[in-house]
Length: 249
Figure 1 (spheres, rainbow, N blue to C red):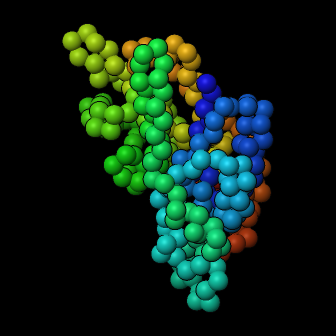
Figure 2 (cartoon, rainbow, N blue to C red):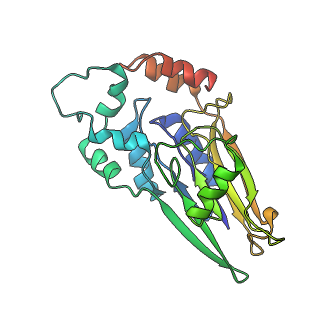
């Protein structure tokens, strides 16, 4: 089974359109979005519209929830800070959609008498704002996946993709856990300006005792970075957001 995972689109329509086009060729069996559809660029409503049109199961990111505190586009009051402009662009219907998104998604696979639990979150199971960075101590990660019974834990938020495998087994009884950061579609921070998403392959021999039975491929997709960067510069958003896109930091 092939499962496509992506997150952190951040209203970057050119990047998201390029990813959707690539997914048409990849033909995954399922697609999930791990949040942060909006923020940092000028196309929040178009991105939300495409997510809904495609019927992509989506969870809320921390930026998505900011719309509860930001004036809607119908309000007459002016935005006090230019960084808030990205949220003011969100329409009323789109805001309602964001505020009703679930916080977690959980899948359970029953393969070869093993139950494999896959948990999808934005930041971490403990907090939507927590960064699960690759360099965090192994014991911290082990405590996390054990607490939430996750054989496969998928998340975004940091915009830095990685796949880390850790073993919680004791006394010779291996139990491997997969921690997968999806990177970012619309605002990469790993020095690669291309959009990023993950293709997760779970085969019929998948097991928590075999670390190689879960395959992860990070797919990078070229898109019109200048179009996205110039849209920022022509808006009320800070110009540094455009620099972030051109340099992927």
